[in-house]
Length: 443
Ligand SMILES: [Zn+2]
Image 1 (spheres, rainbow, N blue to C red):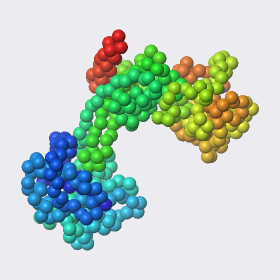
Image 2 (spheres, protein in one colour):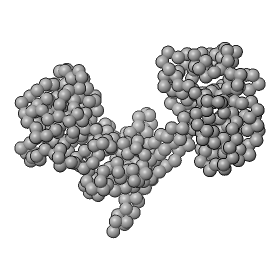
Image 3 (cartoon, rainbow, N blue to C red):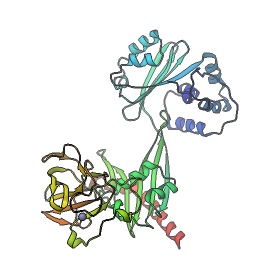
């Protein structure tokens, strides 16, 4: 398959620098965002180019007066191809699909026999190659491992190869919003990407029950980083710091990578936000993100009489294990209907009732991990409508999960604490500034 948007840009990259520096990538990213000038010159386009618009990226290069590259491209008619690695692929089979001729294919295999990257052909990943009309292999690039780039450029009939980590151009964003109809409506209107919004709910999954506790007027500020990978054009994002004010209570989290390489989210004081238990057994998603719908809401009962939490949700909604554990019971039990009971470390048990059906293999003794689907919401047993009845039991007694101190991952180590504060204090300051601005705006 042809992939025109890389063509000239990649040639420039190959000529100007064999090492991808941050600066180079920024520059390339900048190129692609410069408005087009309406000149359309079709060079290097194969007959089966899927869309003519895609080639326009090359015009940007033209206007930046880099004639050598352009003329060369025009004269040699080079083509960019991309191929996804399939299960069972060898470099040879991929080169064939990339339309590389036999001679270059043989030479490349010989030249690349010691390459680390070429031994890591992961199905689903993509290899990009530039050839000319004769199937001569000019450039080959492959992002392997953890954002490392394998780059081969043919110069004077020799294959020159490099393998190096690629630095991504990254940008920091800070966005804030207030919930009026749903969390995702608020993140959408603040222009926060979907994966960042989802991360936000995951970071606080043991702190805030997004399924039940969201309120109109809840507010959030999120500082996140996005990076554009120039090779695959995917956008990655990571929350660096976030504050969520839920029912008037502020929850803050900052991202930190410890000296031993482990990373995660912590309170500004350095306590881990990763707990052994999720608060909610239901996945909070775009679909489920509205406020509770009265039609689905069962009769609310006093905690004292009820000893569980009811989650109103449509029949068939997946139910997740809130913590790692072992299936202690899976079957029908009086008022509970279809019930799963999980036994966790120490004194904890969780129970999930009124299920319409069980996930496959939910037999006694089966080990489950936090987040695994164990069954689906239903209205079996004594249920007034489809909902999940969830219980946390401590030493056999039902307890309110929001009032029990649940075990969490270890805090920042003493050794890392100074670094942690140094790295995160400016992020926390940003959160606080945003909150104050927000308050001021509301007054
Ligand atoms: Zn219930």
